[in-house]
Length: 301
Image (tube, rainbow, N blue to C red; front, side, top):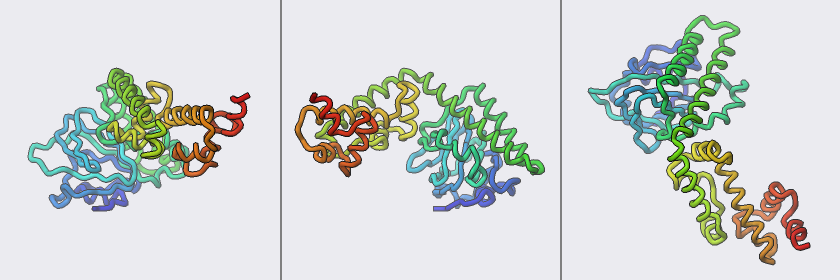
């Protein structure tokens, strides 16, 4: 595996000319010409990447999966992701670009603190954003502004303008993903039904005692989604994240056990997969405003 730590190192590996900025770059896929020895070699990218491919016959290995880019597919990756270029093809078309920026470019800024809002950086490759022609024009225009800004003579305003344009780009991506969830309403509704059915199966005392408390990661994996994509899809359709769904189901089980059994609190906590009774007590107090024992007493009166 090849660890790529800097923008200049990335340019060198891809056979591109030297970068114009040490922390951000826009690479046209037509300019990429890596040596044969770099094909099918896994790379660990230690920066953020936004990649657009158009009408592409380009196979990318993302993690352990192959992903064939289609027209207007926008993909986001966070630092630490593993990527590789598929085998060289004589008919390979390269229409698109990758915008890459190092974490140091935004570290400590307002955008740095807003990054958790852009959960698509943790999506899987097959959850890429598919752009309409109008959306692609907007994205291309913003990226062009970013390139102009970092390519010119840097001054005291350069970094602020770069970060502002990056934030605009990410905000549009968030909007476009919202549109994508809406336009795929039928598929989304089917996924919501499947998720709720799967959650019901996992949220029984028998299932929890056997496999532990259900997690977003485990449920998403069973559905073929990344955890962030699943939560964002559910939030858009239902107003609740996957974690909120799990909490509601766990709360209902807890309430039922507290009211229909005389089991001690520590035993109920254990049956529900809580490592410590104190964690269970904290969970109940956060959801109901009272401790498990107080809830039992109030309902018994």
